[in-house]
Image (cartoon, rainbow, N blue to C red; front, side):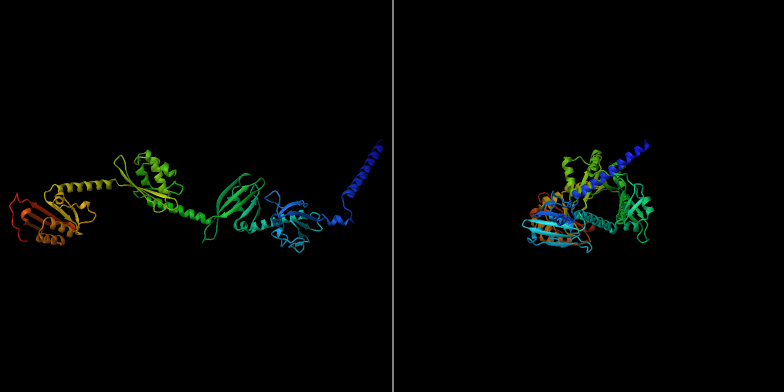
Length: 504
């Protein structure tokens, strides 16, 4: 029984082989073109055709098309796809002459491919032939992709910025020339962390350099894919040095401003507190943790308002708008106000904006200055009241020969009011008024001469009879710092008998 089974299986095998050869012969007969059929080799074999109407492709038998932003490719898309391989391609198909084909050969002398462009009315036919290859468009797509990859590889190799590729475990798979010249593999593994797949990360690290320049700083952006990680580094040495200088400068300013008695608050262009000194804490009673948190400008002033460190404005909304307008003004802007607080404390607040958008506010306690000014003003008022209570006319002439002030009796006698005048009253102007009000040329010439003298051997104290006006007593006293005082006393003739003038 066993031999019969073997014979049966051997017969089945021979039958299967015979059927296979029969099927292969049938497929070759139906599909493969005959060797002597020249018409099949001339039309469609080893060629790809693109048919255009105007500049728009309407048909093709290539099997491969260039990428296009529109649904149907245009001649410009096909031209960009082919021009890396073929030279002298026309910019527009409409510029071709009817019936005159244009032949474009490959730039590579070893490449037998050629391109034929022929226009017939509004239609144009572009034929790509590449013997002995069966699919010229497919071969061109492969060559174009190889050329693109070569360009990308050359660009990466020639890039001045380090770039490299690693596995998810950090093993370097590839790196460009800049990376090989700048970093050691061990430095990359130690300083560049690897993000999780699908994520990105950024890190900074430095590599040693020569003594004159110091270390070189780089910022590395890493992007992890499913099977690898791409790294790109950018040198930021100048940025790091600028940040260091800025940080040192801010620390220097902080140390300098720490000894000032004026509170300082500097806000950056983002309207956040960037710098303050201890005097600001003492003057405003704002918590240090609040100021260290870099509050916004409006939040800073709102906190001052809540602590009653600033006067309550009539319209807080309009005040906020005013502050915002002043901050946004970057040329010649200056905000200055005097805050009188409920606890008899007075602050002078000055804000000066800068062109880069930053603004600095100064808080100065001027309580002592205000109290001194009030005391001085009170003393002036008291002195003026004392002078006004005197019956004599008193005038004070400063060292510049200008009337400084006078009392009420002087204003009533001479009919003058220096405070209401736009211009100063000189000695000459004062003597002219006296000559009109109390005419006597001899008296006023002596008085004017005494007022103009810088030094007097003795005060001028005289009296004169003005007949019907009465007896006039006049005195010129020398005051400190070159000032003089003129006192006039006119006695009515009804109260006192006339007296002859004493010779001066």
